[in-house]
Image (cartoon, rainbow, N blue to C red; front, side, top):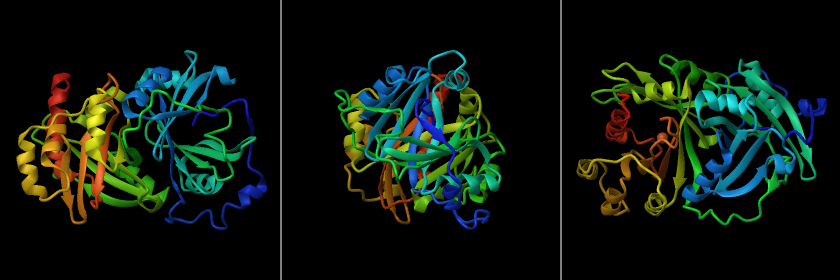
Length: 389
Ligand code: FE2
């Protein structure tokens, strides 16, 4: 999380620390997480990225920190839609950490920040169990109250911040100035973050799966091996970790050995290491949302026509019109509990790294494993065009 530098910062008091819990060394029990607080992106030009997210995705600019507000070294734009909060930051000089991160990775997600009831407890539990500490718990205060923030390192240069904000009524963090109106943003029906997916190196998935379970107390929802997720050319394996009563879902992918280079390998090369591969954003009306996003120029992976012949048989009755789904390229999958609709964007950067999924669930709790093959074949066509297959 990009800290403002003009606000009072202090260490939590001994009292605050004692409030943590009587049993900080507990093993296995879930570290209390309330949900996502924000996703912070470190980008090359946050001003222009913010415009893209506002104009195309319909995020509303709600707060800003930068030179005009007394923050000298960076600019940060806070964007919201539904329960989703994104923060886009860029640095002002060549040696700024955001700039060196960008030089290596291009635009990407730096921080998947969790909202927690008690930052000190979360940080101490995690680090006592072996998480790598990055920022010790710090109290940030202004006239709107106080927050407690800490962070740990995870895969690559990605971090998780813990944010305790129940005593804070400000727009985001101290140092940010509220933006009253956004004349550009028109919402597209995006409501919440459904899941956040990581790509890690070959052989690292099990270690990170164990990390989330043992250190952060997540539970493993599912595991897909390379038989489930493979095409003629490429394969990957995936594990889904969950916390916060299902509010946090983090699938972790690793490449599997196959005839050609997998899309995960392509990502790992382009991002120069592991990182966040995609964000799935939930809508309650995917047909309207996707039609709107397409009309604003967002590019999606193309789905072959044949997919819909096969999908009708596989999925059965759905509330939506098959004509709309086929016209917009929306994928459908069914599991024991219901069905889901999903679609994947092209990467948002010139480097083939981060992309988005738009998802609507009708009871289904899975991730569209029945679509993986159709989807990966579409990704491979795009990968082949880039000369990376
Ligand atoms: Fe996904």
